[in-house]
Length: 297
Image 1 (cartoon, rainbow, N blue to C red):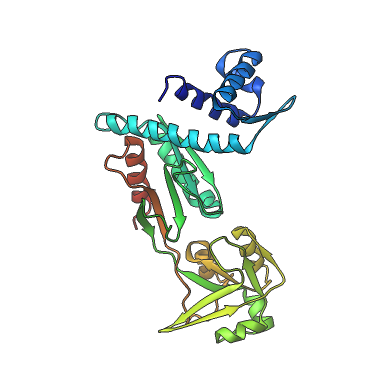
Image 2 (image 1 turned 30 degrees about the vertical axis):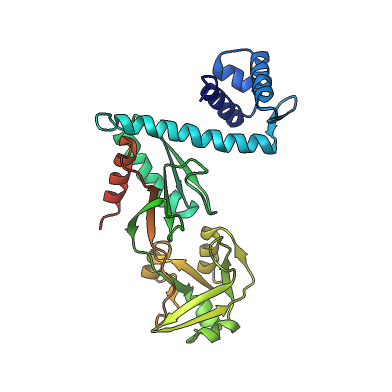
């Protein structure tokens, strides 16, 4: 790698993160014209335009987006390499990028990160909440805490907890509409649909013994936010499919009732994922051990 390449990677990642020449100049302690000149030299060296310039903000070209993605991954790997080399004697420290789903991440993972940060103040944790499929490598995450198995053989998976799914509804809705006894009876019920990336929209899979039934359900309301669909169920809008962690307290209190308990739905166990490697950085080992301990019964 040429000696000027690594500083250029850091420079461009910072520029993309801050989104303006002036902010980048302040961060680097130089003048805005110096930042503009450095960007121009980088573009000349690569032979492509990386940035669309405006008076206040910048936007990346397609080539700029590609350069940013690759630069982030390279810098991430360099940091991991250096931390792995020194992990035997180093205390946990440095940047740790963690991904989780929005609802669970907000209610369960964020408090864990808070406690971890108090115990390991030299680790800088970035918690990103996304409801879409992610790639740890391409998006430069150290770890991900997600429901269900990720189809990436490069990852190590640690199961944190079992997580069943239920069909449930409010007592008021079931009193009004009746309680279905078979999957086919769901066709005449209002169902609340959660639009998720990993599921076939509006199709519920129910198991009873060795029999599997796929049911196409319909309803008046749907959302891509799990908290919203849960609240709609509590308000009596219909039958919803939710995870055990999400509805356990409402089933216990009686605000929701399980529907068709003789049938089971595909489970969505919670896993902690990270790239398989021989020597984990100290910050990752500390976080993994901490999270696993938090989820022990």
